[in-house]
Length: 494
Image (cartoon, rainbow, N blue to C red):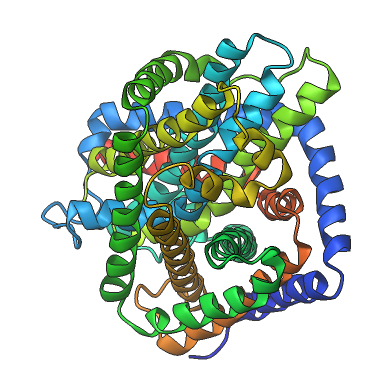
Protein backbone atom coordinates (compact mmCIF):
# COMPACT_ATOMS: atom_id res chain seq x y z
CA UNK A 1 0.00 0.00 0.00
CA UNK A 2 1.29 3.44 -0.93
CA UNK A 3 2.62 5.37 2.02
CA UNK A 4 0.70 8.53 2.86
CA UNK A 5 2.15 11.80 4.24
CA UNK A 6 0.92 10.98 7.74
CA UNK A 7 2.83 7.68 7.72
CA UNK A 8 6.01 9.33 6.41
CA UNK A 9 5.99 12.10 9.03
CA UNK A 10 5.09 9.70 11.84
CA UNK A 11 7.89 7.30 10.88
CA UNK A 12 10.34 10.19 10.68
CA UNK A 13 9.39 11.55 14.11
CA UNK A 14 9.44 8.12 15.72
CA UNK A 15 12.79 7.36 14.12
CA UNK A 16 14.29 10.65 15.31
CA UNK A 17 13.16 9.98 18.88
CA UNK A 18 14.59 6.46 18.72
CA UNK A 19 17.91 7.74 17.33
CA UNK A 20 18.12 10.44 19.98
CA UNK A 21 17.43 7.94 22.74
CA UNK A 22 20.03 5.50 21.42
CA UNK A 23 22.76 8.13 20.85
CA UNK A 24 22.07 10.33 23.89
CA UNK A 25 19.73 8.51 26.29
CA UNK A 26 20.45 10.69 29.33
CA UNK A 27 19.98 13.88 27.31
CA UNK A 28 16.56 12.76 26.09
CA UNK A 29 15.49 11.69 29.57
CA UNK A 30 16.66 14.86 31.36
CA UNK A 31 15.03 17.16 28.79
CA UNK A 32 11.74 15.24 29.04
CA UNK A 33 11.85 15.44 32.84
CA UNK A 34 12.33 19.22 32.79
CA UNK A 35 9.50 19.74 30.27
CA UNK A 36 7.13 17.57 32.29
CA UNK A 37 7.99 19.41 35.53
CA UNK A 38 7.06 22.76 33.96
CA UNK A 39 3.82 21.40 32.53
CA UNK A 40 2.79 19.76 35.79
CA UNK A 41 3.39 22.97 37.75
CA UNK A 42 1.29 25.02 35.34
CA UNK A 43 -1.38 22.55 34.18
CA UNK A 44 -1.60 19.91 36.90
CA UNK A 45 -5.02 21.21 37.94
CA UNK A 46 -6.34 20.76 34.41
CA UNK A 47 -5.04 17.18 34.13
CA UNK A 48 -6.82 16.14 37.33
CA UNK A 49 -9.97 18.01 36.31
CA UNK A 50 -9.98 16.24 32.97
CA UNK A 51 -9.41 12.76 34.45
CA UNK A 52 -12.31 13.26 36.87
CA UNK A 53 -14.49 14.77 34.16
CA UNK A 54 -13.99 11.72 31.97
CA UNK A 55 -15.01 9.45 34.85
CA UNK A 56 -18.21 11.45 35.40
CA UNK A 57 -18.91 11.39 31.66
CA UNK A 58 -18.53 7.60 31.62
CA UNK A 59 -20.89 7.20 34.57
CA UNK A 60 -23.46 9.43 32.92
CA UNK A 61 -23.32 7.57 29.60
CA UNK A 62 -23.55 4.15 31.24
CA UNK A 63 -26.71 5.02 33.20
CA UNK A 64 -28.40 7.24 30.60
CA UNK A 65 -30.69 6.02 27.79
CA UNK A 66 -27.68 6.42 25.49
CA UNK A 67 -26.16 3.40 27.22
CA UNK A 68 -28.45 1.17 25.14
CA UNK A 69 -26.93 2.34 21.87
CA UNK A 70 -25.02 -0.48 20.18
CA UNK A 71 -21.54 -0.02 18.72
CA UNK A 72 -22.58 -1.07 15.27
CA UNK A 73 -25.93 -1.88 13.64
CA UNK A 74 -28.76 -2.67 16.04
CA UNK A 75 -28.46 -6.38 15.24
CA UNK A 76 -24.65 -6.57 15.55
CA UNK A 77 -23.14 -9.33 17.72
CA UNK A 78 -19.77 -9.21 19.58
CA UNK A 79 -16.82 -10.76 17.72
CA UNK A 80 -15.10 -12.15 20.86
CA UNK A 81 -16.45 -13.88 23.95
CA UNK A 82 -16.63 -11.69 27.05
CA UNK A 83 -13.77 -13.44 28.93
CA UNK A 84 -11.46 -13.26 25.90
CA UNK A 85 -12.48 -9.63 25.30
CA UNK A 86 -11.69 -8.58 28.88
CA UNK A 87 -8.40 -10.49 28.87
CA UNK A 88 -7.25 -8.78 25.67
CA UNK A 89 -8.15 -5.23 26.69
CA UNK A 90 -6.65 -5.73 30.14
CA UNK A 91 -3.38 -7.18 28.86
CA UNK A 92 -3.08 -4.35 26.34
CA UNK A 93 -3.82 -1.69 28.95
CA UNK A 94 -1.78 -2.44 32.05
CA UNK A 95 -0.44 -5.98 32.25
CA UNK A 96 3.29 -5.55 32.79
CA UNK A 97 2.77 -2.46 34.96
CA UNK A 98 0.87 -4.48 37.54
CA UNK A 99 3.71 -6.98 37.81
CA UNK A 100 6.27 -4.22 38.08
CA UNK A 101 4.45 -2.04 40.62
CA UNK A 102 2.29 -4.59 42.50
CA UNK A 103 4.30 -4.34 45.72
CA UNK A 104 6.74 -1.58 44.79
CA UNK A 105 4.25 1.25 44.46
CA UNK A 106 2.31 0.80 47.73
CA UNK A 107 5.61 0.51 49.63
CA UNK A 108 6.99 3.61 47.93
CA UNK A 109 3.90 5.63 48.87
CA UNK A 110 4.09 4.19 52.39
CA UNK A 111 7.67 5.46 52.78
CA UNK A 112 6.58 8.97 51.82
CA UNK A 113 3.28 9.15 53.69
CA UNK A 114 4.59 7.81 57.00
CA UNK A 115 6.79 10.88 57.25
CA UNK A 116 3.62 12.85 57.88
CA UNK A 117 1.11 10.47 59.54
CA UNK A 118 1.31 7.41 61.86
CA UNK A 119 2.35 4.17 60.16
CA UNK A 120 -0.93 2.19 60.37
CA UNK A 121 -2.81 5.07 58.76
CA UNK A 122 0.02 5.64 56.29
CA UNK A 123 -0.38 2.09 54.97
CA UNK A 124 -4.10 2.62 54.31
CA UNK A 125 -3.43 5.93 52.57
CA UNK A 126 -0.63 4.38 50.50
CA UNK A 127 -3.00 1.70 49.22
CA UNK A 128 -5.67 4.34 48.55
CA UNK A 129 -3.26 6.40 46.42
CA UNK A 130 -2.29 3.26 44.51
CA UNK A 131 -5.95 2.47 43.83
CA UNK A 132 -6.51 6.08 42.74
CA UNK A 133 -3.62 5.85 40.27
CA UNK A 134 -4.69 2.51 38.76
CA UNK A 135 -8.45 2.45 39.20
CA UNK A 136 -11.58 4.00 37.75
CA UNK A 137 -9.93 7.24 36.57
CA UNK A 138 -7.36 5.36 34.50
CA UNK A 139 -9.89 3.10 32.85
CA UNK A 140 -12.34 5.96 32.30
CA UNK A 141 -9.65 7.63 30.19
CA UNK A 142 -9.19 4.43 28.20
CA UNK A 143 -12.92 3.78 28.05
CA UNK A 144 -14.00 7.20 26.77
CA UNK A 145 -11.35 7.35 24.07
CA UNK A 146 -12.15 3.78 23.02
CA UNK A 147 -15.87 4.50 23.04
CA UNK A 148 -15.46 7.56 20.84
CA UNK A 149 -13.50 5.59 18.27
CA UNK A 150 -15.81 2.55 18.39
CA UNK A 151 -18.98 4.65 18.07
CA UNK A 152 -17.82 6.58 15.04
CA UNK A 153 -16.27 3.52 13.40
CA UNK A 154 -19.06 0.99 13.87
CA UNK A 155 -22.13 3.17 14.31
CA UNK A 156 -21.23 5.98 11.94
CA UNK A 157 -19.14 4.01 9.44
CA UNK A 158 -15.97 6.06 9.88
CA UNK A 159 -12.40 4.72 9.87
CA UNK A 160 -10.68 3.75 13.15
CA UNK A 161 -8.84 7.06 13.44
CA UNK A 162 -8.84 9.89 15.98
CA UNK A 163 -9.59 12.32 13.16
CA UNK A 164 -12.86 10.56 12.31
CA UNK A 165 -14.97 11.90 15.25
CA UNK A 166 -14.02 15.50 14.48
CA UNK A 167 -14.72 15.23 10.75
CA UNK A 168 -17.99 13.33 11.25
CA UNK A 169 -19.38 15.46 14.10
CA UNK A 170 -18.34 18.89 12.79
CA UNK A 171 -18.20 18.30 9.05
CA UNK A 172 -15.68 17.45 6.36
CA UNK A 173 -14.02 20.83 5.92
CA UNK A 174 -10.43 21.86 5.22
CA UNK A 175 -9.78 22.92 8.80
CA UNK A 176 -11.29 19.77 10.31
CA UNK A 177 -9.23 17.59 7.94
CA UNK A 178 -6.08 19.53 8.88
CA UNK A 179 -6.78 19.39 12.62
CA UNK A 180 -7.74 15.72 12.34
CA UNK A 181 -4.42 15.01 10.60
CA UNK A 182 -2.63 16.55 13.59
CA UNK A 183 -4.74 14.41 15.96
CA UNK A 184 -3.70 11.25 14.11
CA UNK A 185 -0.03 12.26 14.07
CA UNK A 186 0.04 12.92 17.82
CA UNK A 187 -1.76 9.62 18.37
CA UNK A 188 0.85 7.65 16.43
CA UNK A 189 3.78 9.27 18.25
CA UNK A 190 2.13 8.85 21.67
CA UNK A 191 1.36 5.20 20.97
CA UNK A 192 4.89 4.45 19.81
CA UNK A 193 6.65 6.25 22.66
CA UNK A 194 4.25 5.02 25.34
CA UNK A 195 4.57 1.41 24.26
CA UNK A 196 8.35 1.71 24.09
CA UNK A 197 8.37 2.76 27.74
CA UNK A 198 6.30 -0.27 28.67
CA UNK A 199 8.66 -2.50 26.71
CA UNK A 200 11.60 -1.08 28.66
CA UNK A 201 9.89 -1.72 32.01
CA UNK A 202 9.18 -5.26 30.89
CA UNK A 203 12.86 -5.75 30.10
CA UNK A 204 13.85 -4.40 33.53
CA UNK A 205 11.37 -6.71 35.25
CA UNK A 206 12.32 -9.85 33.33
CA UNK A 207 16.07 -9.30 33.69
CA UNK A 208 15.74 -8.77 37.46
CA UNK A 209 13.77 -11.97 37.79
CA UNK A 210 16.12 -14.01 35.64
CA UNK A 211 19.18 -12.70 37.46
CA UNK A 212 17.82 -13.93 40.79
CA UNK A 213 16.66 -17.22 39.29
CA UNK A 214 20.08 -18.15 37.90
CA UNK A 215 22.09 -16.55 40.72
CA UNK A 216 23.56 -13.69 38.70
CA UNK A 217 24.67 -10.81 40.91
CA UNK A 218 24.16 -8.02 38.35
CA UNK A 219 21.06 -8.15 36.10
CA UNK A 220 22.55 -5.60 33.69
CA UNK A 221 24.36 -8.34 31.82
CA UNK A 222 20.96 -9.72 30.80
CA UNK A 223 19.52 -6.47 29.43
CA UNK A 224 20.35 -6.96 25.75
CA UNK A 225 19.64 -10.74 25.68
CA UNK A 226 16.22 -10.16 27.28
CA UNK A 227 15.46 -7.31 24.89
CA UNK A 228 16.40 -9.43 21.87
CA UNK A 229 14.31 -12.35 23.15
CA UNK A 230 11.23 -10.12 23.53
CA UNK A 231 11.68 -8.71 20.03
CA UNK A 232 12.02 -12.21 18.61
CA UNK A 233 8.90 -13.33 20.49
CA UNK A 234 6.59 -10.62 19.17
CA UNK A 235 7.72 -11.13 15.55
CA UNK A 236 5.60 -14.28 15.08
CA UNK A 237 2.28 -13.00 16.56
CA UNK A 238 2.58 -9.89 14.36
CA UNK A 239 2.24 -12.20 11.38
CA UNK A 240 -0.83 -14.01 12.73
CA UNK A 241 -4.50 -13.12 12.93
CA UNK A 242 -5.37 -10.79 15.83
CA UNK A 243 -7.83 -13.16 17.45
CA UNK A 244 -5.58 -16.18 17.03
CA UNK A 245 -2.36 -14.57 18.31
CA UNK A 246 -3.41 -11.97 20.84
CA UNK A 247 -6.24 -13.89 22.49
CA UNK A 248 -4.08 -16.93 23.23
CA UNK A 249 -1.13 -14.95 24.58
CA UNK A 250 -3.21 -12.52 26.66
CA UNK A 251 -5.35 -15.32 28.08
CA UNK A 252 -2.24 -17.21 29.19
CA UNK A 253 -0.72 -14.09 30.77
CA UNK A 254 -3.96 -13.34 32.61
CA UNK A 255 -4.26 -16.91 33.88
CA UNK A 256 -0.73 -16.70 35.29
CA UNK A 257 -1.50 -13.38 36.96
CA UNK A 258 -4.73 -14.72 38.48
CA UNK A 259 -2.91 -17.85 39.63
CA UNK A 260 -0.18 -15.82 41.34
CA UNK A 261 -2.75 -13.69 43.14
CA UNK A 262 -4.74 -16.69 44.34
CA UNK A 263 -1.63 -18.56 45.45
CA UNK A 264 -0.29 -15.67 47.54
CA UNK A 265 -3.73 -15.06 49.02
CA UNK A 266 -3.89 -18.69 50.19
CA UNK A 267 -0.32 -19.26 51.41
CA UNK A 268 0.08 -15.76 52.83
CA UNK A 269 -1.69 -14.20 55.82
CA UNK A 270 -5.14 -14.66 54.28
CA UNK A 271 -7.21 -12.85 56.93
CA UNK A 272 -4.80 -9.91 56.93
CA UNK A 273 -4.94 -9.67 53.14
CA UNK A 274 -8.74 -9.92 52.99
CA UNK A 275 -9.01 -7.18 55.59
CA UNK A 276 -6.64 -5.09 53.49
CA UNK A 277 -8.65 -5.64 50.31
CA UNK A 278 -12.08 -5.01 51.86
CA UNK A 279 -11.12 -1.94 53.88
CA UNK A 280 -8.98 -0.61 51.02
CA UNK A 281 -11.81 -0.99 48.54
CA UNK A 282 -14.25 0.76 50.85
CA UNK A 283 -11.84 3.62 51.47
CA UNK A 284 -11.25 3.96 47.74
CA UNK A 285 -14.91 3.68 46.70
CA UNK A 286 -16.05 6.48 48.99
CA UNK A 287 -12.97 8.67 48.61
CA UNK A 288 -12.02 8.46 44.94
CA UNK A 289 -14.31 11.22 43.64
CA UNK A 290 -13.05 14.00 45.94
CA UNK A 291 -9.48 12.70 45.65
CA UNK A 292 -9.78 12.98 41.89
CA UNK A 293 -9.79 16.74 42.29
CA UNK A 294 -6.70 16.88 44.52
CA UNK A 295 -3.70 18.90 43.37
CA UNK A 296 -1.51 18.95 46.55
CA UNK A 297 -1.55 22.75 46.39
CA UNK A 298 -1.11 23.50 50.10
CA UNK A 299 1.75 21.11 50.86
CA UNK A 300 5.50 21.54 50.97
CA UNK A 301 7.50 21.01 47.78
CA UNK A 302 8.50 17.46 48.73
CA UNK A 303 4.86 16.36 48.83
CA UNK A 304 4.06 18.23 45.60
CA UNK A 305 6.94 16.48 43.83
CA UNK A 306 5.71 13.11 45.10
CA UNK A 307 2.16 13.85 43.90
CA UNK A 308 3.37 15.01 40.50
CA UNK A 309 5.80 12.12 40.13
CA UNK A 310 3.08 9.55 40.77
CA UNK A 311 -0.58 10.56 40.47
CA UNK A 312 -0.16 13.32 37.88
CA UNK A 313 2.34 11.23 35.97
CA UNK A 314 -0.07 8.32 35.92
CA UNK A 315 -2.95 10.43 34.61
CA UNK A 316 -0.81 11.73 31.77
CA UNK A 317 0.53 8.20 31.23
CA UNK A 318 -3.00 6.85 30.73
CA UNK A 319 -3.63 9.70 28.29
CA UNK A 320 -0.45 8.68 26.43
CA UNK A 321 -1.74 5.13 26.14
CA UNK A 322 -5.36 6.11 25.43
CA UNK A 323 -5.10 6.26 21.62
CA UNK A 324 -3.37 2.87 21.57
CA UNK A 325 -5.63 1.12 24.07
CA UNK A 326 -8.66 3.06 22.84
CA UNK A 327 -8.24 2.08 19.20
CA UNK A 328 -7.39 -1.49 20.11
CA UNK A 329 -10.36 -2.07 22.42
CA UNK A 330 -12.60 -0.34 19.88
CA UNK A 331 -11.38 -2.81 17.27
CA UNK A 332 -12.34 -5.79 19.48
CA UNK A 333 -15.62 -4.32 20.81
CA UNK A 334 -17.89 -4.17 17.79
CA UNK A 335 -21.45 -5.20 18.61
CA UNK A 336 -21.48 -4.31 22.31
CA UNK A 337 -23.74 -1.63 23.78
CA UNK A 338 -22.27 1.53 25.26
CA UNK A 339 -23.33 0.38 28.74
CA UNK A 340 -21.76 -3.06 28.26
CA UNK A 341 -18.61 -1.52 26.79
CA UNK A 342 -18.10 0.91 29.68
CA UNK A 343 -18.85 -1.72 32.31
CA UNK A 344 -16.37 -4.14 30.80
CA UNK A 345 -13.63 -1.63 30.11
CA UNK A 346 -13.84 0.34 33.38
CA UNK A 347 -15.26 -1.88 36.11
CA UNK A 348 -13.75 -5.33 35.45
CA UNK A 349 -10.07 -4.30 35.18
CA UNK A 350 -10.42 -1.92 38.13
CA UNK A 351 -11.77 -4.65 40.39
CA UNK A 352 -8.92 -6.94 39.41
CA UNK A 353 -6.42 -4.14 40.11
CA UNK A 354 -7.93 -3.64 43.56
CA UNK A 355 -7.50 -7.32 44.40
CA UNK A 356 -4.01 -7.41 42.88
CA UNK A 357 -2.66 -4.42 44.80
CA UNK A 358 -4.54 -5.51 47.90
CA UNK A 359 -2.65 -8.81 47.86
CA UNK A 360 0.78 -7.65 46.71
CA UNK A 361 0.64 -4.33 48.55
CA UNK A 362 -0.83 -5.96 51.64
CA UNK A 363 2.04 -8.43 51.75
CA UNK A 364 4.45 -5.52 51.47
CA UNK A 365 2.83 -3.79 54.46
CA UNK A 366 2.76 -7.05 56.42
CA UNK A 367 6.50 -7.36 55.92
CA UNK A 368 7.11 -3.69 56.75
CA UNK A 369 5.36 -4.03 60.10
CA UNK A 370 7.53 -6.98 61.11
CA UNK A 371 10.65 -6.19 63.10
CA UNK A 372 12.77 -8.15 60.64
CA UNK A 373 11.02 -6.72 57.56
CA UNK A 374 13.49 -6.02 54.75
CA UNK A 375 11.23 -5.72 51.72
CA UNK A 376 11.03 -1.93 52.05
CA UNK A 377 14.82 -1.75 51.93
CA UNK A 378 14.88 -3.80 48.73
CA UNK A 379 12.22 -1.52 47.27
CA UNK A 380 14.21 1.61 48.03
CA UNK A 381 17.28 0.13 46.38
CA UNK A 382 15.71 -1.37 43.27
CA UNK A 383 12.03 -1.30 42.24
CA UNK A 384 12.67 -4.00 39.64
CA UNK A 385 13.52 -6.56 42.32
CA UNK A 386 10.68 -5.89 44.78
CA UNK A 387 8.16 -8.38 43.39
CA UNK A 388 10.74 -11.17 43.22
CA UNK A 389 12.01 -10.42 46.71
CA UNK A 390 8.44 -10.78 47.95
CA UNK A 391 7.99 -14.14 46.21
CA UNK A 392 11.13 -15.51 47.88
CA UNK A 393 9.37 -15.27 51.24
CA UNK A 394 6.89 -18.03 50.28
CA UNK A 395 7.08 -21.70 49.27
CA UNK A 396 7.71 -22.63 45.64
CA UNK A 397 9.64 -19.39 45.12
CA UNK A 398 11.39 -20.78 42.03
CA UNK A 399 8.07 -21.65 40.41
CA UNK A 400 6.37 -18.35 41.23
CA UNK A 401 9.42 -16.38 40.12
CA UNK A 402 9.41 -18.25 36.81
CA UNK A 403 5.68 -17.70 36.40
CA UNK A 404 6.12 -13.96 37.01
CA UNK A 405 8.90 -13.77 34.45
CA UNK A 406 6.76 -15.58 31.88
CA UNK A 407 3.73 -13.37 32.60
CA UNK A 408 5.80 -10.18 32.29
CA UNK A 409 7.28 -11.48 29.05
CA UNK A 410 3.86 -12.28 27.61
CA UNK A 411 2.32 -8.99 28.72
CA UNK A 412 5.06 -7.09 26.91
CA UNK A 413 4.69 -9.21 23.78
CA UNK A 414 0.89 -8.76 23.68
CA UNK A 415 1.30 -5.00 24.20
CA UNK A 416 3.77 -4.71 21.33
CA UNK A 417 1.61 -6.84 19.04
CA UNK A 418 -1.53 -4.83 19.74
CA UNK A 419 0.32 -1.49 19.46
CA UNK A 420 1.87 -2.47 16.13
CA UNK A 421 -1.61 -3.51 14.96
CA UNK A 422 -3.06 -0.11 15.94
CA UNK A 423 -0.21 1.81 14.35
CA UNK A 424 -0.67 -0.20 11.17
CA UNK A 425 -4.37 0.73 11.16
CA UNK A 426 -3.45 4.41 11.33
CA UNK A 427 -0.89 3.93 8.55
CA UNK A 428 -3.53 2.41 6.27
CA UNK A 429 -6.24 5.00 6.88
CA UNK A 430 -8.12 3.01 9.52
CA UNK A 431 -8.02 -0.43 7.87
CA UNK A 432 -9.35 -2.90 10.45
CA UNK A 433 -7.13 -5.69 9.08
CA UNK A 434 -3.83 -4.07 8.05
CA UNK A 435 -1.31 -6.07 6.07
CA UNK A 436 1.38 -8.17 7.70
CA UNK A 437 4.05 -6.03 6.07
CA UNK A 438 2.80 -2.79 7.63
CA UNK A 439 2.43 -4.46 11.03
CA UNK A 440 5.97 -5.79 10.81
CA UNK A 441 7.39 -2.36 9.93
CA UNK A 442 5.77 -0.86 13.00
CA UNK A 443 7.00 -3.75 15.11
CA UNK A 444 10.54 -2.86 14.04
CA UNK A 445 9.99 0.82 14.88
CA UNK A 446 8.66 -0.12 18.32
CA UNK A 447 11.71 -2.31 18.86
CA UNK A 448 14.04 0.61 18.04
CA UNK A 449 12.16 2.94 20.38
CA UNK A 450 12.16 0.27 23.06
CA UNK A 451 15.93 -0.02 22.80
CA UNK A 452 16.19 3.75 23.27
CA UNK A 453 14.10 3.53 26.44
CA UNK A 454 16.15 0.61 27.74
CA UNK A 455 19.31 2.65 27.26
CA UNK A 456 17.75 5.57 29.16
CA UNK A 457 17.74 3.11 32.04
CA UNK A 458 16.02 5.11 34.78
CA UNK A 459 12.31 4.30 35.22
CA UNK A 460 11.48 7.87 36.30
CA UNK A 461 13.08 9.29 33.16
CA UNK A 462 11.28 6.74 30.98
CA UNK A 463 7.97 7.80 32.52
CA UNK A 464 8.82 11.45 31.82
CA UNK A 465 9.46 10.68 28.14
CA UNK A 466 6.07 8.95 27.95
CA UNK A 467 4.43 11.96 29.62
CA UNK A 468 5.92 14.38 27.08
CA UNK A 469 4.45 12.32 24.24
CA UNK A 470 0.99 12.65 25.81
CA UNK A 471 0.86 16.35 26.61
CA UNK A 472 -1.13 17.11 23.46
CA UNK A 473 -3.82 14.62 24.48
CA UNK A 474 -4.65 16.71 27.50
CA UNK A 475 -6.37 18.99 24.98
CA UNK A 476 -7.33 16.50 22.26
CA UNK A 477 -9.32 14.10 24.46
CA UNK A 478 -11.98 16.65 25.56
CA UNK A 479 -12.58 17.53 21.89
CA UNK A 480 -13.18 13.87 21.07
CA UNK A 481 -15.67 13.47 23.94
CA UNK A 482 -17.56 16.61 22.87
CA UNK A 483 -17.84 15.14 19.36
CA UNK A 484 -19.27 11.93 20.85
CA UNK A 485 -21.96 13.71 22.87
CA UNK A 486 -22.86 15.88 19.90
CA UNK A 487 -23.41 12.85 17.66
CA UNK A 488 -25.29 10.90 20.35
CA UNK A 489 -27.67 13.82 20.87
CA UNK A 490 -28.27 14.00 17.12
CA UNK A 491 -29.09 10.29 17.05
CA UNK A 492 -31.58 10.66 19.92
CA UNK A 493 -33.35 13.49 18.08
CA UNK A 494 -33.77 11.51 14.88
